[in-house]
Amino acid sequence: MTSEVQRDRAQAFRQLHQRGRILVLPNAWDAASARIFELEGFPAIGTTSAGMAWSLGFPDGERLPLALLVQGVRRIVEAVEVPVSVDIERGYGEGPEEVREALRLVIEAGAVGINIEDGVSGGSGKLAEPDVLVRRISAIRRLATEMDVSLFINARTDVYFVPGMDAGSRLEEAARRLALYTGAGADGLFVPGLTRPEEIARLVQGCDRPLNLYAGPGVPAAKELEELGVARVSVGCGPMQASLALTRRIARELLQAGTYTAFTEDSLSYSDANGMFGAAAGRRRGEEMEGAVLIQRYYEAWSKGDVAALEDLCSPDFVGHDPATGPDFDLEGLKQRLAMFRQTIPDFRVTSEDVIAWGDRVAVRWRTDTTIAGELFGFPPAGRRASWTGITIYRLSGSRIAELWNEWDNLRMLTAVGAGSSSPHFSISKP
Image (tube, rainbow, N blue to C red; front, top):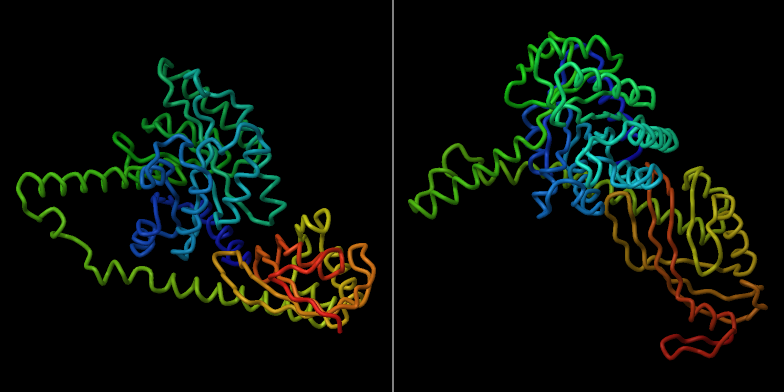
């Protein structure tokens, strides 16, 4: 997904909370469930942390590895054309900086909203102090600004899940925490467990942010919640639990009766299910092709020594990582590298041999065949014809290169500049 599309979806998601009509937000656990919700007409989709964890064989409670969460988010985002908000539980980190880096990956995967909770402190069984979430919200807000994404932060308090509090104290503590989270930069406020209309109305009146409730037993219907001033109602892991219950009924019928009613009646046809993903697959292929073409233009700029072209091909905040040649470098450093290579290697040419594109990444195995005519990395001019290879992974942002990771065949490079003997797998000859 391009950065322009992500910004548009972020704006659309924000507007869904400001139109005076309640947003009923379904929670998906994979691409298929997300696609079902989209096809039925929902204007946005949330994820369920429990549902995603269970679908991949993990219990809820940040037990799902972050890498798998991000991968799952990316697949959901790529499967639909509506905004996606992600349940990140307590933030996947001990401190604000760890949470910030986890959120960077979630935003890069295409999320335009998040749900983050105070929750229960590990081992204590008590609700975490509100300043913990305040610091995390502040860090996330700064990150979203830096990434130029209008991320909708929905701050959740679990006050109504803590036993032993009377109704008045519970409502008062919820209001206190929501005010703190609003001050830290929250865009929406989430109070699962709240069911009584009179308490809902009081909380709505005391908040200056959209209020989100959790659908379930005892919670008023969406229309009544809308009349009370609630802006959003989400369903959490409820649909996933219902799907698991259906699967259990299917299993029991098969084992006990040997019949097939539970999965043959009111079931999607194979063609309907398979057809849900045709457009998404085509869209992904198109975006991946665009990424591959962008990298080809980048190599053409290097082969031509076109320093000015890098301005159009790379983001202003570009970062390059090339451990073999020194510290990280920005766009100006990249230009200096290209200028240095053209001076040292006038006939420098780069050829891409293998290209793999996925999501916002493009990986390239490349080769260069050239004559080293000048000093290179501190070595005197070799005057030799040389060839070496490398692998570079690019991260794209919109239609530009935002970051790259470079790995050279260092032995061949050293041999090429005359620092060592020739490798048996590498031929080098004097001109």
